[in-house]
Length: 555
Image (tube, rainbow, N blue to C red):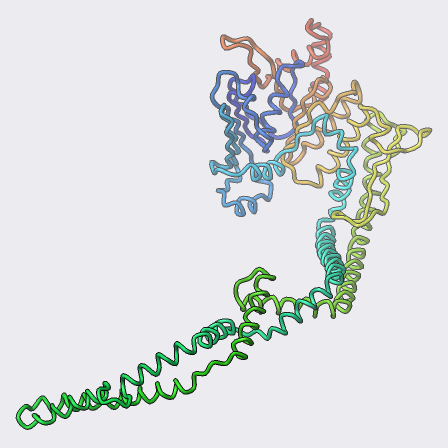
């Protein structure tokens, strides 16, 4: 629960440091005194979008910091998940905003994203304003109330898991049907493309091989001439070939071997060279005989290469390997088309099975919701009768709707303040005061089912007075029992008197201009404040006496 709130340089607040206490607290003050400013600061702290205009005029930055006691609430998993130090007795949330428009958020002095402080804030504090009364118009809010009372988290999670599987499978089925329709239209063209690629008889490396062979056939005469020339120079019929010259050199060295020992080794090396060159000359001769110009083969090669080049240009690729990949993909797509009916039937059966599972889970969820709805109807009547609606009728209609993320139920809160008026959706028929009482009753009911440390009511008492206001104060007092903190911003003395702790917000003129501030009232100050709320600026003895009576009844 909220232990301390520190605000510095926020709109009209110069500096405020206020301690809060367990139980039921009230905040009073004249209209425009700054109560909404304090709520705005708390909302900013809990993740609301920041605006540099909220910084007090002339200041460079504003700071909003709150200390919470988490001892009775299971929030440790959040801190572990976000790698933040955990202190159950003193959790510090801080938000800083600079005049330059920069905003920073901290939890226990650890910088965090705004989403993290917003997530934690939702678990720590709920601000109920008059604007929230409009939530009664929203089907999702009404359904969430039923789910909270039903405590159907497990059933809802099981349904949502089944619904997720169903929607994914349904999308796959729709995609497959779309693909089949699209592919059927282009099947003939795809088959033509595949046949064209297969007729090209492609294989890895074939393009390089054909290009090399084509180059050879295009230069046969040059090749034959070079081979004959080389063979003639190395070992031809004339006497001065390379081989004959080497042999002659070897014989000369052999002749001096007896008188020059190194000559024998050199002669052997020359003989080896002569043998190798003779073999080369024979190879050159053979290759020259086999190299023949084949115009038909050259034409065939050029035709195949033209076909490959044409396919590469057509498919916008540059290698045979890429063409082979396209051929493989086309074959797979056509195979998929040929087998699509069977695959479609299998997936359709899977979708139908998952849909049935969804219906089963949704039915179980509806059963829990209907049971909870009956309990809500009973409790709401019990709560609204003392709040000045003795003939109240309250019912929850749960109708079937197409399956969605939250199930197959359409929930509507129906209301009538008397027996002669037909029940209709509460937002259409209830007055402002009646809606306030309905919302307070709902909040009181769900507060027992949700571990929410702090609830702030911002003038929920609008449109009521007298005994009804006293009853509303009693309900908020009841909500504050146990480990819960309830704070009510009110203009009604009957509610203000119910508070265990009483704060007053007021404006004062200083050298720096008009500032809003807040103070905790003593017992005597409470008497004066409530008396003023009863009689206005001129506090009478009767008002003081009445204030003491109200405070005495509230003890």
